[in-house]
Length: 186
Image 1 (cartoon, rainbow, N blue to C red):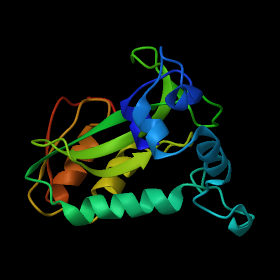
Image 2: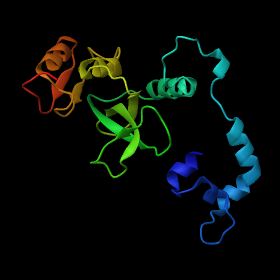
Image 3: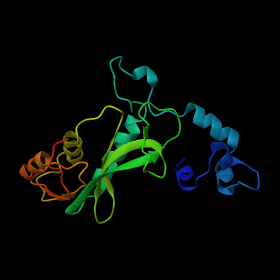
């Protein structure tokens, strides 16, 4: 599944095809098409019956793996002094309640996430997926930073996220801000 993100093909079936025009032999060496389809049919990260009736988490089914990956990201790397926050888009064309459309992106439809990265290495240190119901940019940024304030970081961000109020709040928390700023609050 990870390799399908690297080797782009329009249809999932083409990865295990024997047609000479679209074949990628490595996939067939790992497992047969029938075996892959059976595994994919029953592949789940979370038991649906364990979902509480009042659960509003739209990422409930993938939350365990997402939380595990993010904890490992933070555990294995400490970002340098310069960090940045921006948005990223995971291309997605299927049905999804929180899929977004952005006419300015090469891939117009996808899953939007706010990403905190190390500016020097682009290492993703923290990530928050936008699920259709948004927090304010201030809440999102403070949530991404978590307990990583008061460490003398310089946070680079564009004017979409930045405001005078947020810059003052971050300065109180020992985090400096660099980037354009909006005069008006959003």
